[in-house]
Length: 120
Length: 113
Image (cartoon, rainbow over all chains, first blue to last red; front, side, top):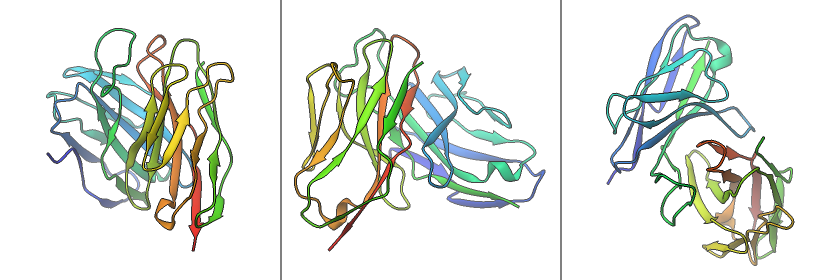
């Protein structure tokens, strides 16, 4: 069980380039998330997905795109990279059941190791 | 809207000292509360959680009690170790509003021998 994996670990981009950050999970979780973490700051949600084929915007979606064609994969696409997108990107997944009660073992987010992106 | 507030860091303690990191929240419904820990160079991992009022979450000597009357979920440990040096994030998940988890800004802890 690898959990949540992310590739690449590090990347340097030039302004205007594009790239895709890969994220995969092998826990059959329905929810997946992309966050960015700027130095000394907390996490900001970029996009999330509640299941294959369904995605929604978080707090800071501008400049990013996502897709969720399978349960396992949730890639994040950066188009026209800008210096403001220099950050550490974390992918996460969780298993959520319907209803208002958070059962033990659900709702916990499992994070990948992160991708450190620098845009110059 | 929902929000999480944490005490400002960084916090520096000597080994075996008592740790408290304060966390308060605002939520419209009945949130679940979490503490996540981030060790240097790694992603976040769950430290403990509580899903209803008066629940106590505990793990690795850390504890936090869900206090609905004071809307708090303070993290405590009786005797910290150097290996506890990390950034600690308080978070909430409120199913009656939307499905996203709200994270606090994080509190950096350094434990010195």
